[in-house]
Length: 231
Ligand code: 5GP
Image (cartoon, rainbow, N blue to C red):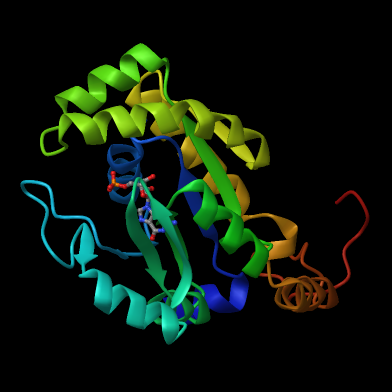
């Protein structure tokens, strides 16, 4: 399946960013359940797991030393310090998925999105806007596992970060999850058939073959047999 798809088009590298509490994780989870063949890249982080988070599922939870060694060995496609912790996208896993022509979803911050766009200019960036700062605060408070000072830090940063939306290809406003999922799905559907992502020579080969054999043949009639115009 991946082999056939890889022949037809290049994989889509989709980056979703937005302030903490905007609903990125829920949105990405929903979209992965809905859109077939969308791979999720699991990031590494030095922050502690929240209750319910599992190593290797939400993140690979690493200590600072291990993370730094990976940086030295250039093992990240991108990495950044976000809210005082290190976060990075493992390069090898990403390269493998892209080589196979897979569609990959990265849920990363603005600094990471900039690095990815520089490395992969064809990447598609989506910025998820929360409906309001009040709603953002409510969501952060509702989320178990972050200390009050961590919540304050994230809220303060949200104000600065939100201005980055201008650098993104698309903006999705998360007023309600259902509509946000629908919009993200529409972006993926459209980007999958973007001309520059398609394997044009493959299409041309198919179209040329079809035209050469007279694609307007009727059932029971040999392909390419002469037919009267308008018949
Ligand atoms: P959280 O601690 O709430 O899971 O994530 C905090 C922030 O780090 C979010 O904005 C999230 O998108 C970002 N983040 C998660 N993984 C990565 C990554 O691999 N690279 C970068 N640059 N940011 C990440």
